[in-house]
Image (cartoon, rainbow, N blue to C red; front, top):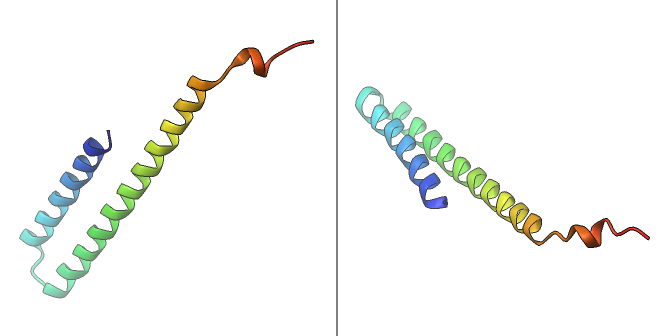
Length: 74
Protein backbone atom coordinates (compact mmCIF):
# COMPACT_ATOMS: atom_id res chain seq x y z
CA UNK A 1 0.00 0.00 0.00
CA UNK A 2 2.77 2.41 0.90
CA UNK A 3 4.41 2.00 -2.51
CA UNK A 4 1.26 3.34 -4.20
CA UNK A 5 1.02 6.26 -1.80
CA UNK A 6 4.71 7.09 -2.17
CA UNK A 7 4.42 6.81 -5.94
CA UNK A 8 1.55 9.32 -5.93
CA UNK A 9 3.48 11.71 -3.71
CA UNK A 10 6.57 11.40 -5.93
CA UNK A 11 4.49 12.05 -9.04
CA UNK A 12 2.90 15.18 -7.61
CA UNK A 13 6.25 16.53 -6.41
CA UNK A 14 7.81 15.68 -9.77
CA UNK A 15 5.19 17.78 -11.52
CA UNK A 16 5.85 20.67 -9.14
CA UNK A 17 9.60 20.37 -9.74
CA UNK A 18 9.15 20.28 -13.52
CA UNK A 19 6.90 23.35 -13.34
CA UNK A 20 9.53 25.26 -11.34
CA UNK A 21 12.33 24.19 -13.70
CA UNK A 22 10.30 25.25 -16.73
CA UNK A 23 8.78 28.55 -15.65
CA UNK A 24 10.93 30.06 -12.89
CA UNK A 25 13.87 31.97 -14.35
CA UNK A 26 15.50 33.33 -11.19
CA UNK A 27 17.96 30.75 -9.87
CA UNK A 28 17.68 31.91 -6.23
CA UNK A 29 13.90 31.60 -6.22
CA UNK A 30 14.11 28.30 -8.10
CA UNK A 31 16.44 26.91 -5.42
CA UNK A 32 14.18 28.03 -2.58
CA UNK A 33 11.09 26.59 -4.26
CA UNK A 34 12.85 23.27 -4.80
CA UNK A 35 13.80 23.17 -1.11
CA UNK A 36 10.16 23.84 -0.23
CA UNK A 37 8.92 21.09 -2.58
CA UNK A 38 11.40 18.63 -1.05
CA UNK A 39 10.18 19.53 2.45
CA UNK A 40 6.56 19.02 1.37
CA UNK A 41 7.43 15.63 -0.09
CA UNK A 42 9.18 14.52 3.09
CA UNK A 43 6.31 15.73 5.26
CA UNK A 44 3.67 14.06 3.09
CA UNK A 45 5.51 10.73 3.18
CA UNK A 46 5.87 10.93 6.98
CA UNK A 47 2.16 11.67 7.42
CA UNK A 48 1.21 8.87 5.01
CA UNK A 49 3.40 6.33 6.82
CA UNK A 50 2.03 7.34 10.23
CA UNK A 51 -1.54 7.10 8.96
CA UNK A 52 -1.03 3.68 7.37
CA UNK A 53 0.73 2.42 10.51
CA UNK A 54 -2.11 3.70 12.71
CA UNK A 55 -4.86 2.07 10.68
CA UNK A 56 -2.89 -1.17 10.34
CA UNK A 57 -2.53 -1.32 14.12
CA UNK A 58 -6.20 -0.45 14.58
CA UNK A 59 -7.25 -3.16 12.15
CA UNK A 60 -5.09 -5.72 13.94
CA UNK A 61 -6.59 -4.73 17.28
CA UNK A 62 -10.13 -5.02 15.98
CA UNK A 63 -9.39 -8.44 14.49
CA UNK A 64 -7.96 -9.66 17.81
CA UNK A 65 -10.76 -8.15 19.94
CA UNK A 66 -12.70 -10.76 21.91
CA UNK A 67 -16.10 -9.36 22.78
CA UNK A 68 -16.99 -12.27 25.02
CA UNK A 69 -14.13 -11.37 27.33
CA UNK A 70 -14.67 -7.60 27.13
CA UNK A 71 -18.40 -7.70 27.87
CA UNK A 72 -18.53 -10.64 30.23
CA UNK A 73 -21.47 -10.40 32.61
CA UNK A 74 -21.80 -12.04 35.99
